Image (cartoon, rainbow, N blue to C red; front, side, top):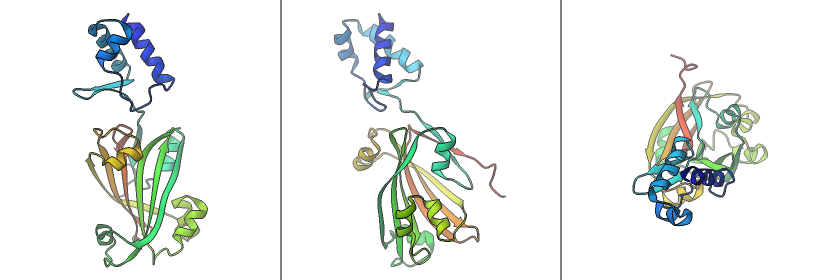
Length: 235
């Protein structure tokens, strides 16, 4: 009997009746639904755990697992290219592009006055229909004065920079931290509040060694695996 329960729940997951991140009904609810003992329900749930379809959190319940994607930190880190190599469907959704004073921590990273004007591009990365990363990209407006208009044309950072004469850029530093999401972040990324965020704060330079970009990406920890790839970093 427990196998039939497991198969029924697995079918609901594959048919997206239960979506990634959804909480399964409680054991008590499943007992009442299938007219079985709690032991039978636990056997069924354990099978789903073993098959990697759900994960159980004591005191919070059982949730449908989200597919995750390896995200290598390389000398040239491009989320779109990484998604393409992973053979997943990926797209960017531009949330905003604004010109104004940069936040003080960002201005300090650029080594400019707090009154310096920058361009802030905020985008949402969607992988296989699931929001996976919310990122903000900062550029000095005086360095790339036509960035906003050109980005609106190409909808790609790399293509925009090439159009403006910056043919290449490299990652020189990545700071990785983790914390729980705010209500707004959880809503945008469609993730539970108990799942932590992985936050990368990155600095990219042009090929002449000048700072080009400061970026901060907030990623759902159950959808992204950070991989430090040092194979192509210079000593």
